Image 1 (tube, rainbow, N blue to C red):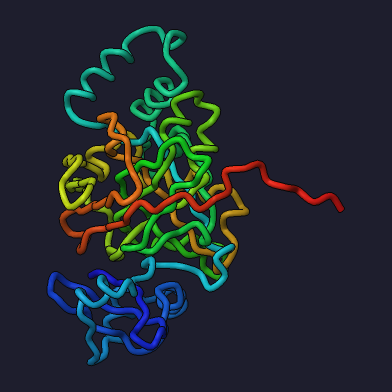
Image 2 (image 1 turned 180 degrees about the vertical axis):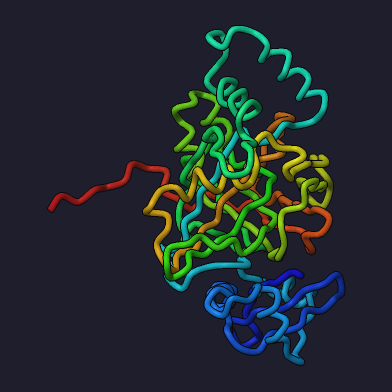
Length: 332
């Protein structure tokens, strides 16, 4: 089962069931996936069961939702400051050829490895612990809150201070915290983590600067365990033509960390278990056009798809809106 959030032609928020057809089935009742998830927890039912019980007779056309830009992220919070956006890196094994080359490098003395290679090695060796045990911690980063989330079909902003604005193709885990502080996994969605790869490559300590920018995920929420073998396709469209494209892999068969291990090392922090909060946690990039030295331009369109996840996630790249001059700070 898949869910979406959107606004109707009058601007009223709605939730709908989605399948592979041209329409979605509008739900009666709560107008947010967060509220449906908390209802499911409160009544000891699955989110799928609660959503199915709310299925109404109204429908919306996918073509209208896309053309009129009425799609919302598939989960959010009424106070965006209570939607935390975070992620992890160095969690995917990559293609067979890249994996073989990586393993060859990892055979040497650990003191000769870069910090990134060391962390990848630790993930390969300890990122999938036995049930009931805790594995190696992954790379982790904070990306922002709900104010930085861009809905599907809306433009991602290229800041004036950025040296690059490139997509990162991945899957995001979506969560809400129950009233007793228990993290509840709502589901998974296609995601574009969107980063400044030029800044990141200058120095690894610039990683935080490269991550503090917008992102997008959706448009559909997959209500099940993450498939072990996710296979998708990503494209960068420029002027209606394909400027770059690549197949991509995710799911635990293609990762050096288990989802449970990534979740543990995020939610182990008490501050991330505040009742009612929403969490969007990027599970690690599988690919991106930057890997082929493609330089994105305003007007480009990022498109990410994968079997089982429904409609593609699409965002254009918008012009710079942030100031390019030094900010004037007023002293009090």
